[in-house]
Image (cartoon, rainbow, N blue to C red; front, top):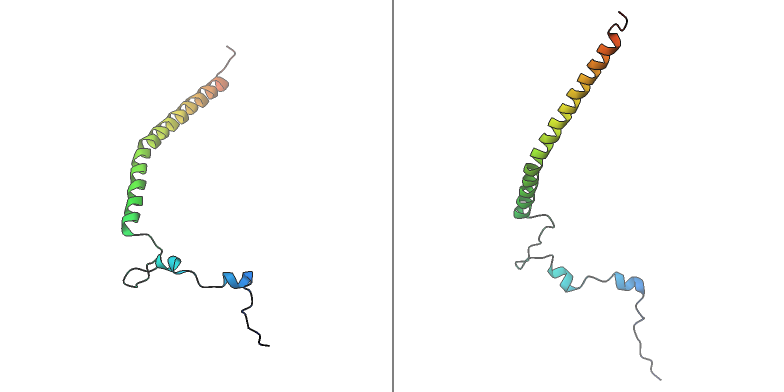
Length: 94
């Protein structure tokens, strides 16, 4: 009587230790076999910088208007304090 040897069943830990499939590896290499980095391209970086510059230009007038409003509020507060000080220090009795 002859016995045939069979491979043991794969365990879950063995399945996850296998090498990734070729479809996953295809995205990481260029056609010439050079490995492509995972960074950003120059065009992507320039586009992001341009968007940030446009947003800063749009935000500039709004910030200057808020700054002018804050200065006006501070000036009004100082005038109010000076008026209160004059009322307290002025003689009320003739």
